[in-house]
Image 1: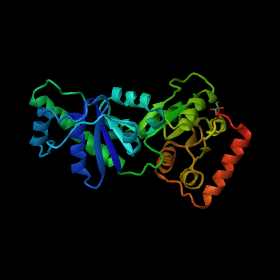
Image 2: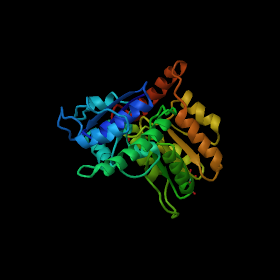
Image 3: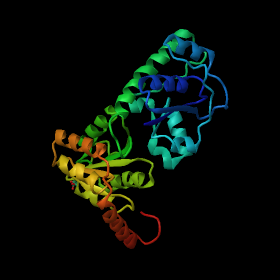
Length: 302
Ligand code: RB5
């Protein structure tokens, strides 16, 4: 696992998080950088003192500015704040699917605030939060997630309740979920929610999608109109697993009026954790892609 921590100046929060994760997971490749860092600066004196009080050593640290290559070299990039996540997502939209806040990855909410200017107690409180969240994030990141940890979700009125349950479940398991709605009970049309989710998946901005309508069927039909999307509707866990293993499906559709909550959540877990097998399935998916190219012509997908 390759993890990149990002804060603003790369002289306090992200080096602290880096040091904590190196201690927790010695076999992982861990690095840190800053969205606005001046290169070559040491960690701040207060950050070094806070680290030393926990037996961590930041004396050799030198700041770096984050670049596209850093993101490409990481399996996941964890920012200290939502603002830093949004800045990276805007700067590198095609790589946004691998950028989460540390809170996302930990299944928590909020930012790791900058303690700059505070006393030693303020730094200790910041490091407390970093330690707790990095430990939780490490536990989540140890679970397989071959499609990545950034998910888009959507539903119509018939799927909204189950979609909300799935979103909460995924967030608690350390996924970042972009919820495209719907958010109420008013009757609405499933293609209006399939569209943004399918397009987010096709663009690479998110790793995969979950769509819920009454049956899961209309969502799958609509999502599959977007080039690059392989959406499946499933009502049990074997289908969810095989859709990933054989078909490299990237959007899971569920029927809120068909499938029970526990089975739906188990299907989501199977889908999220199963890698594509490749091998004999690669030639078949190449033929599916060729069909899609024939149907769509050479241009951009919908
Ligand atoms: C809405 O009544 C229902 O038709 C829709 O949620 C979905 O099941 C369509 O496939």
